[in-house]
Image (cartoon, rainbow, N blue to C red; front, side):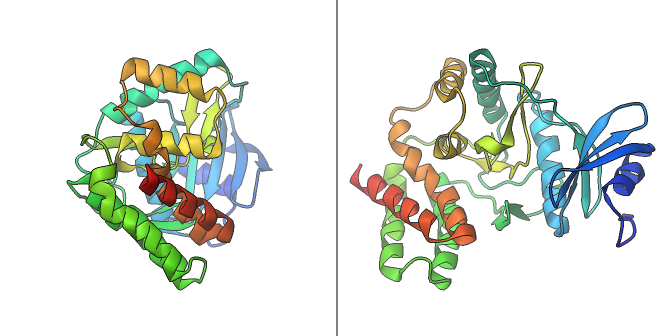
Length: 290
């Protein structure tokens, strides 16, 4: 696959990957730029240093789009360094859009996955969530898979870095030991966005939500909902009402929010340090107490 010259910028990458001339470019961040193509279409060009991250994001967006439920930006092209997708004109959050998003998210989850931990078709087994590695290893039993592949790897990394003490890690390990009894009734693998914090939920000017930057994989649907709770989401109760109208949640799901938040909290502990470690420990203790 041609990846352009080493010094290639966003405009040149957009032109190469779309086959269209570029009329304007505006940097958005160190890794993002907004590029206007001839004809007026505006796209977002994203750069990544890890080829697996680009492959995983492109495959994840395709997999979410294939469900025909929650909207995602159209991907115009990608290689091992660049991803070009439609820009989403922003609009204000609203109750109606939130309820629709909840219904669409329920339908996305119901589209399913071959197994817990299954990567999107064409996506790499070794992917990423933000700047942290994410390994997609299929499993059939959610409690054991969640402990082995979503909690313990980041717990070990945090202990190795000195961010968590071994005695503190033992609290999280006790949660893992008790997961079969804490997880609620078994559910089939859901098609997850996988990194569903508010920054990846775009409220469109047309009244529809788009999801960006997925860490898509097969998982438990309550994990996506727990991520929405963790960092907040406008009109969250309306989102949940729409979700539950389309697909009722299992009894006790609110009490399990902290259990599902252990994964993103430990990822953030590895990336950002002790403050998130305290939150992870609080979630673990709450899960044991419940």
